[in-house]
Amino acid sequence: MSPSTTTTGTGRITMLDDFLIRAALAGIGVALAAGPLGAFVVWRRMAYFGDATAHAAILGVALALAFDLPMNLGTLTVALAMAVTVAALAARGWAMDTTLGVLAHSALAFGLVGISFVPEARSDLSAWLFGDILAVSRSDLAFIWIGAAAVVALIVWRWQALLTATLNEDLAAASGLDPDRERLVLTLTMALTVALALKVVGALLIAAMLIIPPATARGLARSPEAMAALAALIGAGAVLGGLGLSLQLDTPAGPSVVVVAALAFVLTTGLGRPR
Amino acid sequence: MTALLEARHICVSLGGQEVLHDISMQVAPGEIVTILGPNGSGKSTLLRALLGIVPATRGEVRRSDGLRIGYMPQKLHVDRTMPLSARRFLSLPRRHSRGDCLAMLARLGVAEVAERPMAGLSGGQLQRVLLARALLSRPQILMLDEPTQGLDQPGEAAFYRLIEEVRTEAGAAVLMVSHDLHVVMSASDRVICLNGHICCEGTPRVVSSAPEYRALFGLGTRGALALYQHSHDHDHDHPHDHEPEHDHHRHGPHHHA
Image (cartoon, rainbow over all chains, first blue to last red; front, side):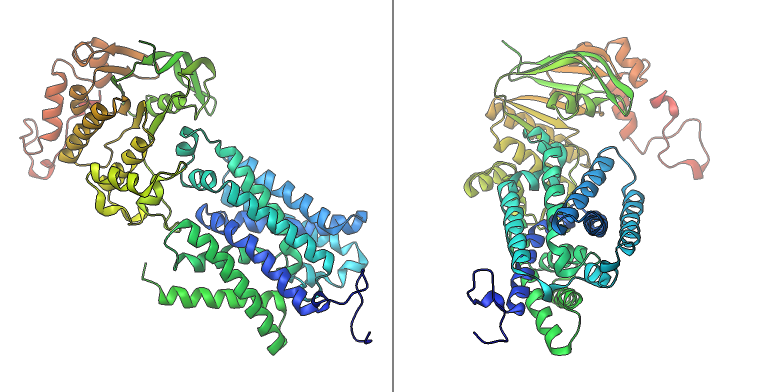
């Protein structure tokens, strides 16, 4: 065994030992979940909702560090709590623009203050804000792919119902569907996706992975299905492109991924039909 | 014949305010029933309560077992961010074959919109696509919320004729909500006059001569026909108003008294 390679738990050396391959796989996993979910975020105009949930994940990091809990458990729990709170307030008819603005930024501020109490986390604060995709471990990878599979499975399973409820809740209810349940599905998948994406792109840019790929796909797609699938592909492409950019120019990986996605958006919007 | 749909003494509150009080009504197979009332009288809410979209705070709504409902909402806003063709829309949430969808669009005279995005349809096209979707579920009852909103006068009359035709073909009952008096009156078997509670109910002829109905719509002694003629004759002289700058289509307040 050469000294430059690391050994794994099983003692075998595989391609997963390459940090770059792990990074690419992690990013692709996140993109596959974020694309279809992001399509609903765009259709339902829930962009700010994604921000609030993502920012809450920072608070989850702080709590996990403070109480010595598994990181994924902390972020998932707090993201879920935030998503459920926001959904409940929306159902009660709160002014969502203001409510989400208050919740999103408060969660971020509380999280940042909370993290400052944990000395070992203070140093790599930027990893939580902007992601640390090059440091993805095998267990991170397993968490991301299992989570992404769950998100995609839920969305595929509920697809017709989610689409109807997104279009018009009365139409869904008159067809015997429960719009509240479909909203809950999106709330759950949102919290899960945020927890998955935190390590890859960081809390500040998760919403970008939810919104930019579907927005890019919108100009090219003729059906909701095509838009969701294209969003996943564009997201995966942006991950590969961003990692390449980061390698070439020594730029931070997470933001580079978002930069590539944004460039793709500008390109397709420019080429697409004027709207 | 047993009713398809029945409300028994239902009350409905929205935001803590009771908007419907003690409503009892039913719809039998094949009949056309129109719920008529001024703005804010709870017409749409009654339809939504019958559909089970809003819960009744008191009383109960009964639908016959396995009742197939074709619902047409008052309006449908399709966000431009969703690429949704009319044909794809028809298969939500239940999928129908491409042939069935195209045949239904052709039946309603909008075959050409099948592959067009929903967000780009005109008001009349959208109404027909909404009706097509309602009919594709092979409904026993069509529930239409202001189905002619946004249509001009000829479009409105044509749309009511279309509803009557498809009802005859499909053998479905129709329960619709409207605030406009004239066309509805001739197209309905039964009219329910609503203003938070049921003011009066019966055949169009009975209802149009009922004092409650006349009071509700401020008709005085002029009747529905007079109101129709007055409110749509924009070229008549205003007998008490000779100043030219006032001479544009102002209707006296007596309509809404």
